[in-house]
Amino acid sequence: MGATALTAVFGAVSGVGCAAFANGLRKLPPFSQPWKHAVAAGVGAAALMYNADLETSLKEDVERLRATRAEQNAEYMAEIRAKR
Image: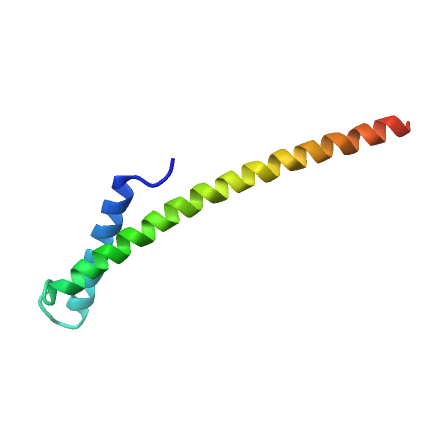
């Protein structure tokens, strides 16, 4: 499926939420130091986009390995049948 705009938005919202939560733990107003929220939104969006791209590439790798294994298994079984 790949990375979509929804992935980036969810990452950005998660980043802002983490920054607000961290401020809440320190008993600060939730949106004090707004530059930290902007950085957290960027980092969250980048992290989830990277994760989505990594998942896509890993799925492609697994499919390629499965195809290779199926081909090798077919060759092996043909060898066994030929020996009989």
